[in-house]
Amino acid sequence: MGMITIKTIEKNSWQLFAHKALRGECLTLEEGLTVLEADNDEVLPLMQAAFQVRKHFYDKKVKLNMIINAKSGLCPEDCGYCSQSIVSTSPVKKYSLLDKGTLLAGAREAMARKAGTYCIVASGKGPTEKELDQVVSAVKEIRETMPLKICACLGILKDEQAQRLAEAGVHRYNHNLNTSRANYPSITTTHTYDQRVETVEQVKVSGMSPCSGVIIGMGETNREIVEMAFALRELDADSIPINFLNAIQGTPLENAGRTSAMKALKVLALFRFICRPKRFVWQAAARLACVHCSPCLCTQPTHSS
Image (cartoon, rainbow, N blue to C red; front, side):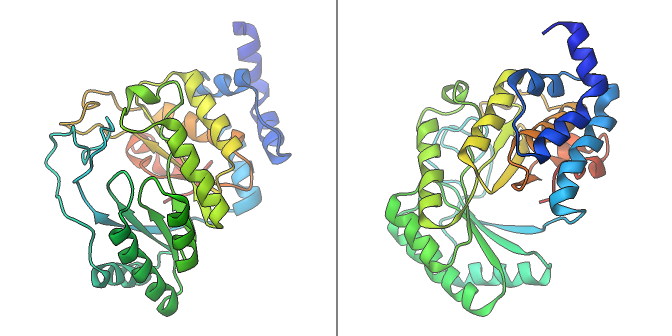
């Protein structure tokens, strides 16, 4: 795509991209690259265009989630971004799955903080049957006694495990794609990209709402970022968290540079344009990347976490 064409798109087409998104149409690869490669002077009109999509379906509302780190460390996976992985030397707390009483106390804290969703997150490749029993028991009591929605993030699931969580009352299950298919082997070798896709598909079959997103800043190209957005559109996740790598000392990606604020804003706009317009695109670990610009700008195309 020539420079003249790119500049023409920059000056005239952000609104057209918003209109395409509102009609449920997908940007092309070239259009997606134009968003990521736009001049920084174009960020404000780009944000305004992405905001039109967000406002049409969600107005100015934000959603508050509260996460409990239900199990920390002790993970056999070698994910390069994670301080809890087996290859990380970063000092982290290590403990097995929290007991039911602690999980219930966390739910009451979520209520007190006026969070709408309580997220139970555990390290590891996937839950053991004992761990699943503990989570199921806690979720059932939370649902019986509190008006909270429950999200779980426990790793790779077997078919029957997804069904048990759904029957217990888990509304949403998070399992991120994390990066592009092509980049995945450079991030982890202990499980595959396809295994992650399969878990999201199992979640959909069980009746839980699928939540799946990405981590930006792990060596992917701009083309791969656009491909990630296409993959999530095809996967049709209801909730799409956009994370930006916070490189942690002691992990294989400890020397990865931080995504610039301007690049982060372009990425958020891109996912709002490409992912289906009624889907919930939100900031997860995005605030650090945007803080040097304006945290408020992050909520123009997306929602807070």
